[in-house]
Amino acid sequence: MKNFEEINIGDTLGPLELTVTKQQCRDYAQIMGVAGIAGRFTDEEAAKKEGLPGIILPGNMSLGLLAKLVTDWIGLGNARMTRIGTTYRQPVQPDRPITIQGFITNTDAAERTAEIELWIENEDAERLVIGTATVTFGK
Amino acid sequence: MSTILDLHTHSEASEDSRAPVEAYLNWIKLRHAERPLDGIVLTEHRQFNRDGDYRHLEDKFGQMVLRASEVETNYGHMLVFGVNDDIVKRFDFANVRLDAQTLINEVATMGGIVVPCHPGRPNIGLYEHYQSKPPLENIVAVEALNGGSRKGEDERSAELISKFGYAATGGSDSHLVSLIGLCATRFEADIKTIDDLVRELKSGAYEPADFRPRRKPVPQAVEVEPR
Image 1 (tube, rainbow over the protein chains, first blue to last red):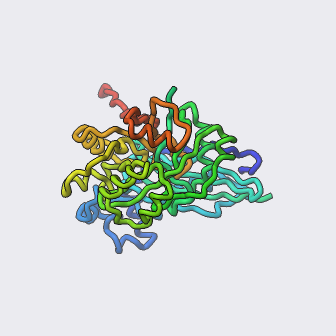
Image 2 (tube, rainbow over the protein chains, first blue to last red; image 1 turned 90 degrees about the vertical axis):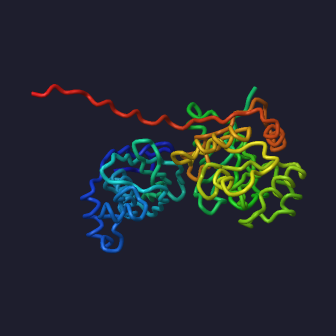
Image 3 (cartoon, helix red, strand yellow; image 1 turned 180 degrees about the horizontal axis):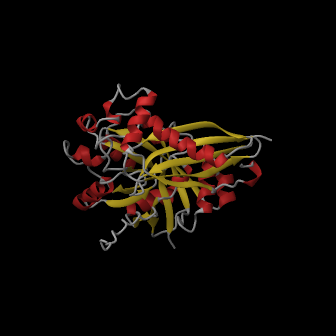
């Protein structure tokens, strides 16, 4: 559980290192109903025909991973994530190690909010997906 | 003495950034050991933030905040330093098809300097435009290191610099607070004002500075004796 009074600019979230498998990617696409719309999330050949290196994670899956980092960091308590936004810079590929992390970059004592920057990076430390989130703390 | 400046940054005045200037300066203070900047130059997209007054923040954080612009031309994106009333009257910075050669020549005449940024980037970088159009004249420097570069982009910029003998700058192109200062420019001279900066950019007495974290080493495979 996080309290506003105990957070500081520069505090880190993560890093969380993980590898999303191709099967997890396919399962996510099926469940979210995007598998039939775009083969790039489920089919290696279809993805390559689109000029991609292979299957890629759906954008919402990357967004979900970033959001999970924030909500895990908040834990149980009276804080909640009130906004998240992302920019997709490069495709995130399954079966390759990725690291998810973030920083608190600003706080507002009057509003009791924390601004957080988040990103997914690959093994070359390239930021594939970047984003910002706002966490609002209760009193 | 020397001065290290991040020459390419975007604050919340740019439509695609959420970074307040104060948060940038606070981050530089926090990370000064890794990114020893003396200041930043705000280069908002397609505009010049004429009325921005950051003196109270400069005093609070001991960092310089200068203002310039990033504009769009028929040869890609370019940074305009030393923007003044004459330049603003002559060029509509919101026009995404500014003529690059006219911009470079006339900004120089009016006391500024134009530096093409992320030249190795597809579509919006000088390198790709040079494949189909004649090279521009009167370019002094281009941005050699850009904090947002993908694989191969800085290498293409280096190729361009080597071929045409341009001076080389660096900038983070930061749109997020934590990316500020990852790339910068180290000047030989002291810089205190935008006029100093323009003079030094014209002199060529500087080099790009790379403060990006090193790439992770590839783990070595360990040979295991079969049982």
